[in-house]
Image (tube, rainbow, N blue to C red):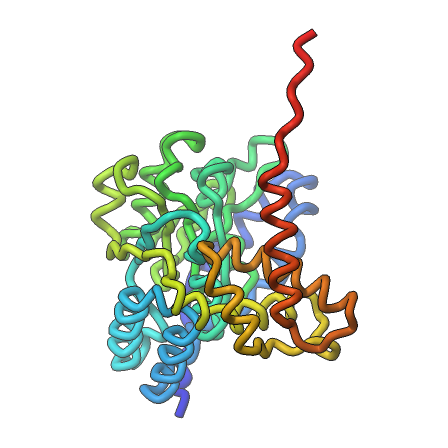
Length: 327
């Protein structure tokens, strides 16, 4: 049976409303909805051991190459279930592995199964400090960071936050070390300070998953805060296991459930198993095969649709790139 956790105090509402009075009219208008809602916040209802077993079983079926990560999540969830107030929680996790193996998708599906929010920061393309901790209200287009925004607008205090490509954070985002350390250190996270909000917030319930291709560029103070787990590319047998779940997800995204089933026959699975591909490439093949299936008014993808998609993609990649005109 699911146990409800009590409402918790993430910030001082009165201090927040006083802070709002110091903002310019333009900034107040931009953040009107954020400051007006201020919902009562509850940690996600605690899960029973049986519910945790169901979540872990689903992860093992859908992500067979993430077995070590799933073992860790299982241990952490069982520990949090023993608490009377913790709610669903796991300590920071770093998923290491080559691109295209489904690291971010794993985190998103975990959040979905836990019934909590999901947030993602792409550290290879964004300014980590501003995205995490907001920007000062003295600057134009200032706004709260992703942590404060979530805690101010949602009823759950323990979303899954993905720090995508954390190994590239130092290359394009400036010095994000302090902002990341504040979030990753439980004691510091209880007094998380957003540059825009300027009222301490309790971010210690947030579940952090970082992804990286390589640990070498990650600073040691950051690296030491994570449980590090290496994820390998799926084997052909694992790819065969993953394919129906990947197809089901794509069908739901496209909202074509009434006209297509996620069932894959043996011949279609065999055709996929022959390919030397990662999960990202699998999704590309399935997405194109779905197009061919819809064209044929077929409710189920066949070997023909898979093979046609593979040939089309391989043909595109094999085409020579046009030479640049040097004149």
